[in-house]
Length: 411
Length: 141
Ligand SMILES: Cc1ncc(COP(=O)(O)O)c(C=O)c1O
Image (cartoon, rainbow over all chains, first blue to last red; front, top):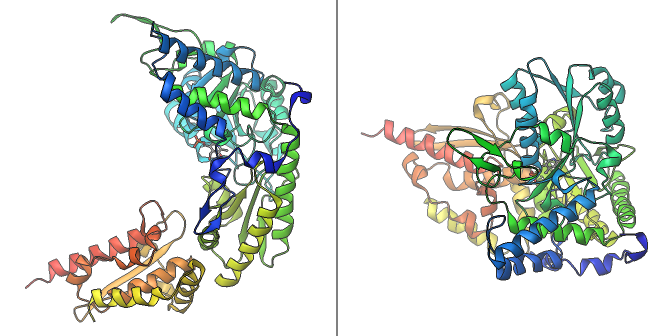
């Protein structure tokens, strides 16, 4: 879609599309600042879920009947919507998964089979547990070495240190596009070039980026890109693994079952072609179709205006929080977006989170599934406000007043 | 006073708070007033792992009555510990082991004792009850 066909971005209008935002919690207007954990769903997605189960519900890729064919068509159309949104070359490159975690595990198990003892994998110090543990498991299984690229105190990857870890034994770099805890935007395009220069592949964890910025897998030149539907205004239980076709072709199947086979005999089974080779069993059909709907919704929006709005919210919140005494902002990367994490001397994040909740404000507290990162900063956890395009400046004002009230109560 | 009477007393105390923030204000004050556990007792074996906040528990039986102190790095958790101490301390291990702590629900704090909350409180109560049970089994005459 060209810019011209997109409606100008209006927070007021867009909020109307999200019924979950219009509710009272503990008698207060809900302020939803936990978008890093999951996003709310627009009416078009809710309608699609309802429509699918009311009318189109049938198993796909195997029925001769009307409903099965309709469901199959819609599911495959969703794949194409997603392919176009990511700018992937072919629909074969778009594999439906359960989510980011599932996509990473697929790559760790399947691409991992192509690796051999002594090979090296590089991750960064700011990864989510789901981009740490599958690699640890793989390294143990296949006797590989896991290397962790360090970050500085601002929460930025130290590129010179990353460079030092790269060598001819490096086979994969697995890095988050945006840190869920810090908001840091990693220079994934540059990292892809560096990885490729030593013959390594790169996996980009897009769990926190797809909902905040345009994604172009060709321009980024990543080998794998994974994300979760539920963080990008779609349903839970569905996600996507993008992989370069030549690479996916070389990789063995991950799980066996129906749909992923071409011919089964007890002596020998041949596998289906892409993308089905990696989609064993009945997929989350409703999820795939509705994720397509969510991506269609997103592509109808002016993503540049959205990016600007979200960055303004985060900067505004951070500037106000910074004025509090004994406040430490965790994550001050030059390139950052949509997330403000903080920690306060003498006040436990859990206490602040509990009091904010009772004032109608949903934030996340704790380690955000990034325990090594918390260890690096020497804190038990943070309070994290994470924004989406439907959040407003007024909500930030209310949030700041509520943080102030909570801190006064706790000290 | 029995465990039940003490629970009723707390429920009545909380009745006057019509607003969540006032309720928490009271709990926070309780937390601030709670004597800290002796720092030498803040050891690994007394630490109850919780995902969010950590709790240390030190329980013993003195003259046939349960005596426990506990501490947490989160003040709200500590305040709720204060309530639990009020209800369960100085009671017989057998009564502690079988106590139905319904007051937590009645005053609307059940979320803090839910298994998904991971703040260590539920594990603390379980551990305390186990200690009480063990003691009452071993000292049956
Ligand atoms: C950066 C990052 N990676 C991976 C994940 C895991 O996503 P999911 O739990 O949807 O698989 C998350 C979600 O919290 C995340 O923020």
